[in-house]
Length: 355
Ligand SMILES: [Fe+2]
Ligand SMILES: [Fe+2]
Image (cartoon, rainbow, N blue to C red):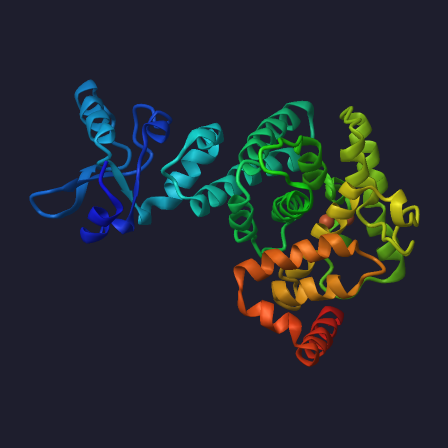
């Protein structure tokens, strides 16, 4: 295997090394172009183009380069690799060469595809596929806290219900782990992951004239929107989803600690930790998403609004949310200690949120 220094000297940092683990998912037709490092020229050169059918001879050649640690794809080809691996997410569980930022992007695409399938056809088959992909995600995410930050960095801004579901999954599992994680102690994240992804399932049945209305909702329309929780309850029953954690996320993600939420107006400890995680992740992801009339809020502003709403959102969890944002932006740490600036930011944030 070539050392990092060797690769940097040859400009190979523009390339991702391909392992056997990933290579084995390629099949006979290459989903991406392959390159090798040519010692004579001192740079990376093309080997086989995308869509090349691998004969036994070519396959042997590729295997040999791979075992020498001398098989790469150009980063320009990264989207094709992401599309391919998202169909084979299990390969990422034992993958050591692909960096974690790339793995997070690939997970996003892979989970998003299964969420889209299920949201457009909420039946047993698509649910099982979603369950499988979430199990792989949960297996991957708990191993190393470093991975959570990368998941956090992958969030999308589109106003799209399926992107919102994946964003909520990534934020929710990250803050939940941040609060409860103990190194080496495995947690069953599967029900929480499913709850986070399904929390707005009922929205698929709300007419677009209401759910996508660009202007402020009238009282009647607001009531109609709130029905998405009851609709989801019926859908979960029909799909025979009976897990308490999933149900808590779906039924209670609009409940607030001070009793001001809906549908039941639950308070404090009657709202489970998982539902509180879902509530914060949902609210945060809703705020950072683009709207028809304005771009999404800056993540820092959104987190400040939630942190300041101590009566509604669990402060332990909003602190965990802020810590992710600080870890991505060290200047935030100093800012958080500057009371005057924080007040200013909060005023801007609230003003923006009201627009
Ligand atoms: Fe909702
Ligand atoms: Fe939501």
